[in-house]
Image 1 (cartoon, rainbow, N blue to C red):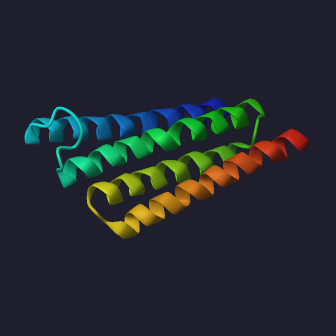
Image 2: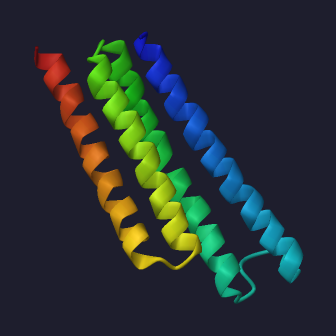
Image 3: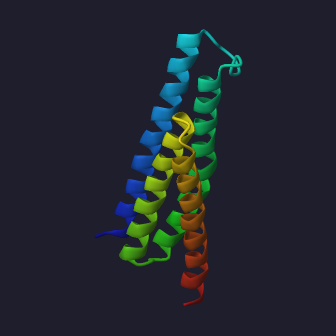
Length: 128
């Protein structure tokens, strides 16, 4: 399978996740009649934070993944990184929105693991 497939899948899945989180923020703003900030509403606060966290993590991982794609990293590595990172981000978002601390912690932990593996893999690809 073409390596660009995995980068494209990463962008598709995680763009949909970011979109869903943004729509959730808008839905809660309308529901609670809060136009700016969080209005002290804990649900809205969590929704905003979940959305922002997704926006913090995705761009750098996407840059590393496109670098791995250009360096022609193995399809197996790319598939593991994309699937693992995407599942980790879904777990994290669920944990943030539903106050499921274990899911949030698992999601955050695996996000860091996959980011680390991806970054190290760029270095390995460069020296081999």
